[in-house]
Length: 188
Image (tube, rainbow, N blue to C red; front, side):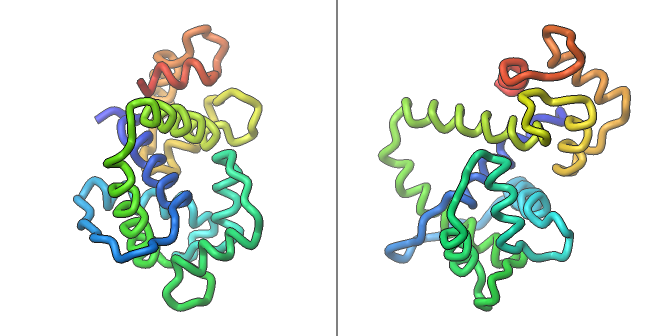
C-alpha cells in the first residue's frame, strides 16, 4: 500500500464528521469495517492535538480552519455538544465514532439523490482540504518537512529516502516542494 493511498479517504471521513448535520429522524447506522475504523481513529488523532484522548472545541476549530472552514464559536460549541454524550463539551474516541456513524448514515441517505456533478465537487473540496492539511504554513506549497510531518500525523512514518522518493514522484517542476496541481496529480 502506498503511503498516500489512505489519506484521501481519511480526510474525506474527517470532513464528513466535521461537516455533518443533526439527524432529524432516527437513522440506521452501519458498523464500520476495519479500514474505516482505522481511518476514523487516525482522524480522531489528527483532531486531538494535545493527545489527551479527547477533542476540545479549540482543537476542532483549529482543524476546521486548516481545512478552510471558518465557523462561529457558537456553531463549534453546538457541534461539540451534539457529539458529547456527557455534555462536558469534550468528545472521546467512542463518542467521535458514534457521531461519525450518525453523520455517515445521514450522508448515505442524501447520497442516494446525488448526481455526478456533486461528486466531482466533493472530490475537489476533498483535495483542497487535504492540501491545506499538508500545507501547514499556508504558503501554497508542501515542503519536505511538511510532507514528513503530515505523513507521521496519519500514522505513515517515512524514512528520508521514502520522503525523497515521494517528492521526486510528485514534484513535477523540480523546485523541491509540491504545489496544488502536483498534489492533485499525485492523488488522482
